[in-house]
Image 1 (cartoon, rainbow, N blue to C red):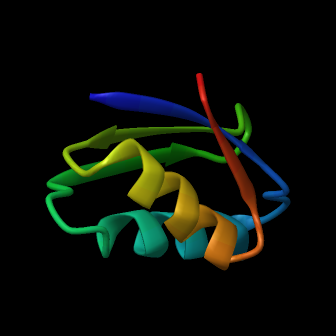
Image 2 (image 1 turned 180 degrees about the vertical axis):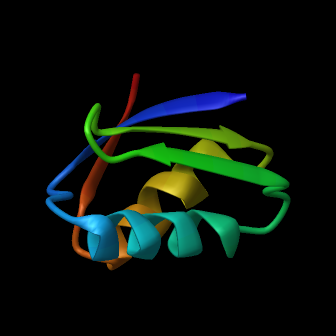
Image 3 (image 1 turned 45 degrees about the vertical axis):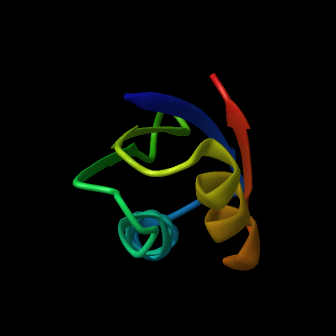
Length: 64
């Protein structure tokens, strides 16, 4: 399980964009994004691929 800090999310659309981006990463089986806390918990997937996927949506992800 990977925990990420996500910067730049301000609304439900942001949360959905991050969830979708993380969910498309190969190997990911579960994604939970907490908009208020600015955090994501992901099961599966490669850390670098997860960070890149979030970055491509315009947000910043760092390991928590």
